Image 1 (cartoon, rainbow, N blue to C red):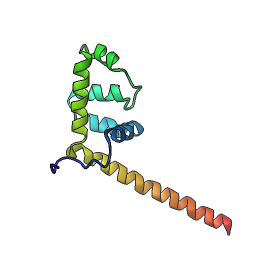
Image 2: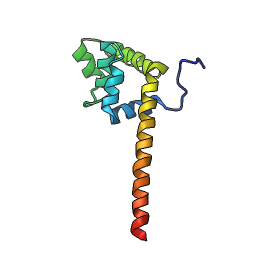
Image 3: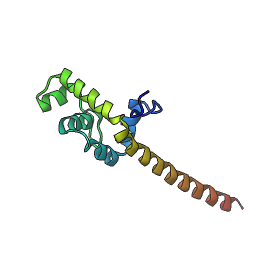
Image 4: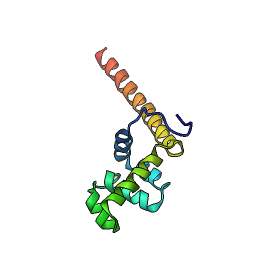
Length: 115
């Protein structure tokens, strides 16, 4: 496996789902893509907006459905590249630490209530 590719620990669907869950991160990463790829990725996968069909995106951008699909695949390939993947990893790490702290606080509060 080339060193510049992320491990397959996260599937493409998981990455896109995470970006939909955190649209501010999705837009931050999308800004690193060329405009056409950014638009296709955001519209097709509903990052910070409603998901649109291939045919609707093709019509909006005056492209064929096949071309929109190609652009989408190219953009997704770029998402999986280490230069963008580290942004997702950092965000996930920060959120897991935040969630751990919140869960720890609630657990401690519950223990005090049981005393």
